[in-house]
Image 1 (cartoon, rainbow, N blue to C red):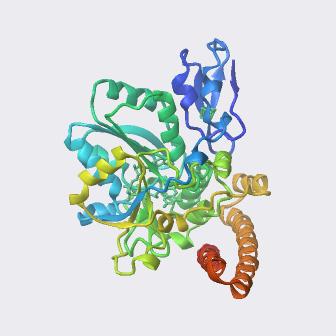
Image 2: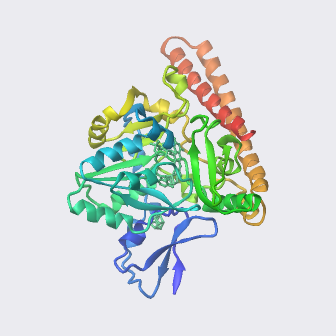
Image 3: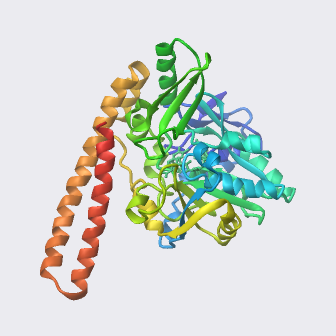
Length: 424
Ligand SMILES: Cc1cc2nc3c(=O)[nH]c(=O)nc-3n(C[C@H](O)[C@H](O)[C@H](O)COP(=O)(O)OP(=O)(O)OC[C@H]3O[C@@H](n4cnc5c(N)ncnc54)[C@H](O)[C@@H]3O)c2cc1C
Ligand code: SF4
Ligand code: SF4
């Protein structure tokens, strides 16, 4: 007999399934389009391994290191083809190539079908190419942590990339971290439900009267900026249909933050304290800090979190244009540390299941817009308070409140950008 045992904020990291000594745990899709564990009670010996190690049931240790600001860079590939194919500045490929050149192996995510992403390994340039590009769906982890361990035992150099919850789970699985492992977490504000992509493909197939064979989520025919990058669908008859991300229902629903996994609303990995040796992301808002950098084809934000990470970045500098920057500047436009759980989440999921993408988007974007408006109003009141304090106080106190106000105004501007994007 099988039954679901997932804790409320299960991230679908599959650590439990990899740990189970009897292989009694299978990861299955739940009705919200996320992966969660199902236990075969006949095979289970009640050893408790899964519950003891589950990250969803532990107090966050990550917060303790939050003050440890890492070294940070903005970087982009010199190889223009790779830069074009990558979601951001292509730093992932630079790191992976360096590991492959040493006879190593890469673990990352590829498309299995147009609506399903899965972890696998790459040992050649062709296999690596399939890992490039973000897949905004939960990736099937399978038994990948076991495979990573197997390769590490052979003393091969291993690069593992994934969302922070996956990197964290791998490290828990391994217990001790061998020197031949390099981990790279992708800065992640949340993983959206697979149901969104499934509905998106279903509606597009009906419209085109043809089958979707491939999806690419971050093409750059006009540029990297969210207002310019495209999500593209490729059909069996060879045609391609694409939309600008900021006017596309799939991307708008993803970025409404109303259809993320429940774990993402309580995720401990949003800060500059990170589980990977290196964290990589889009360097959104880079023009505010480095107006002379070329934005057109994408810039990666890179946080270096360990000595091992620093050595790895040092070893790929020849492949990149890379400049130091501040981690706060990179993280400024990322998701806030706390993301409120949407009150009408059930209604939004029901609308998606029974209605159209357009109807779902209307409710989801309205919900997010209301939340952002509330945040902006709160910040407006706060900056006014700081303004008055900086006006009446002197010396250090005056400077302190001026600085605080400057930060709030910057956050307000960033939030306004996110709000405007929803109204497109
Ligand atoms: C679900 C999700 C949410 C994200 N949220 C943010 C965000 O809030 N802010 C931000 O700046 N960047 C975010 N990113 C990361 C960003 O989209 C780029 O993937 C990242 O900047 C790397 O870009 P690149 O140019 O170096 O490499 P690319 O060549 O684009 O590399 C893609 C890398 O991402 C991995 N990957 C792709 N899809 C998945 C997946 N579903 N699960 C796990 N790993 C995957 C691949 O294995 C590969 O290592 C997110 C990515 C995902 C998958
Ligand atoms: S959070 Fe990970 S380890 Fe815990 S139940 Fe979910 S899949 Fe298993
Ligand atoms: S927000 Fe946190 S829990 Fe959600 S996918 Fe990203 S790392 Fe995992």
